[in-house]
Image (cartoon, one colour):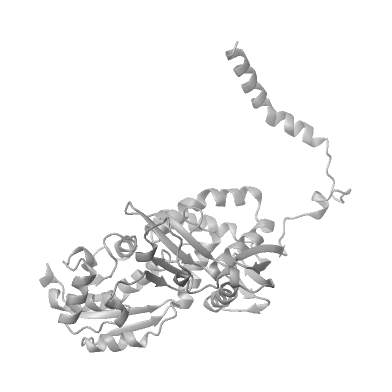
Length: 407
């Protein structure tokens, strides 16, 4: 019941939609609203959000720089798993939602709020991610999802509501927005409008973080990334904080057109959607991490990680960051990273990021074993004969049975 809600913490961007939500919450629930704006490296000036909130009479305005926490506690653990959803997507939007939702819940607890609220629509994945996180962290908290409650179902109605309530509308909002954008330090995500037909190539103006690979520098650039226990710690020998490191890689990758992805994916809510993603720094990081793993992980451990990765990625995509199964998989993944320390060299050139060298003090690679010359390590080639004979035994038995069956 609306009367039960006295205070709400709203995930607030300062944009048109969340400004309308702010006013709608005040009118519908007659409640106090606390606004929370997270700086996750989206590259936007956040002070306008403060001024807008003040215009609505909001007394408790929270704007927090969460970039370091975002990369350290969410992006890096995910990258230890080499997580990719449906083989391609580096989960830039998915991994940001549990952090935003966590802070919403924490602020609600700090301020004695009865509910939290978000601006995710009823068609998308984000509503699931926000609310599953809330369920896991505070089962008693109420969640208000305006897009599932109000009758403002069209852009026209939203604009009419904004004008009626004297909510500032940016000039470009009066027409049809060409596409919608979500951004953070890991990626940019663009979808909708001009991108809704998957049979039409995305226009170049959709890309905001990366140079067109065809117009990228004609000379390649090499970057060295150092790792300690699975996490990146340095770029070209310079030690950097998690957020500073990803920022540096974004600059390098963006310059060379690295990390573009045009994807039709399967949303958790049941529909397919087309998104255009830019993950320049993350793409470099993904390749570099696998490069160091390639010489430090045992074959069995490496293959097991690759087997569980799709499940791990799906859990994040579907909003189950705070779930027992994700935590169990994380423990396994983190155990595998004990010796994933070293350095990978990546060659950046016109949209590509390729590992060209990798070193580690814990390397399992032995030149003496793999050399075509006589190595120092004892290896009897004759041993392979028995190995093949034993592994071929079941195949011989299978083939003989099939031959009998065909007679």
